[in-house]
Image (cartoon, rainbow, N blue to C red; front, side, top):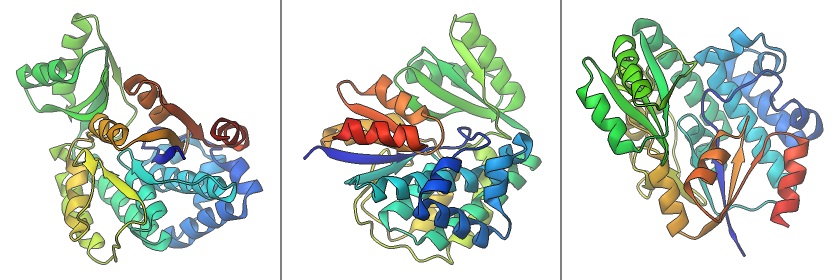
Length: 307
C-alpha cells in the first residue's frame, strides 16, 4: 500500500465560501463548524461562507475558519475511506494536524486556535511588520540578503527550493524586497497583518503559552511532522513550549518534505482552502502524487487518483 500523508493549509489561503459544499453534503464537516462556533462563541460558519472578505481576513477569524475548513475536508476524506499514515501542517495548519492525529481533541484544538489568533492579532496591532514571498532564489541567497539589509528582516517560511518568505520590520522588508527586485527576482508582498514567525510575535507567544498549559496533549496515532524541527516530532512532553516557539520560529517546510520522502510517503493530500501546499510539494518533490481536497469536485478527483 502506498503511504498517504495529510497536509493542512496555512493562513492566507482563505476565501469567502470555502468548505460550503462539504458543510452541506457531509455530516462530519457540518459538525466541525458547529463545534468551532460553540468554542469560539460566535458563528464562524457565517463569516466563512458569507464574508465579508475584510472580516474573514482578520487573523482573529481567518485562523479558526481555515482550521474548520481543513477539518471539514478531513472528515469528508475519512468518510470516503481515504486512509492516512502521517500528518503535517503549514504554520496554522499544524493545529488541524494535531486534531487529525489525536494529539488534542477538537474542542481543545479550537480553544488553542482561538487563543493563538487573539494573541497574534494583538501582537500584529502592536507591531507593524510585513512579509514577502521571494520567488526564484535558493534559501541561502535569501538569508544572505536579509543579513546584509539594515533593520530586522529574516527568512521565516522555507516553502520550496525556489520560494522563501521573509518577514520583519516593514521598512527593512521593503529594503530587502528592492534588492531582490534588482536581482530580477519576484518579491510578492503578502496580505497579512504583521511579521508572523518572527520575533515581532514574541508577545503573542508569551500570552499564548498560558492558554496552551490548560490543554491535555496526547501521543499521536500517526506520524506527526513539526514546522519548528523540520522533521518528525517524537517528544510530545512539553507541547505548550513547542507551540509558543512555533509562533516566533521559521516554518521548515522543505526539510519536512525531504523527511517525508525519506519515510516513503507517495501521496501528499492537502486538506483545506486553495492548493498552496500542493504546489509546494510539486515544486519540491519529483514523482510524488500531490493533490488537494477542498470541495466535492476535488474530493472526487482525489478518490479517482488514489484508486
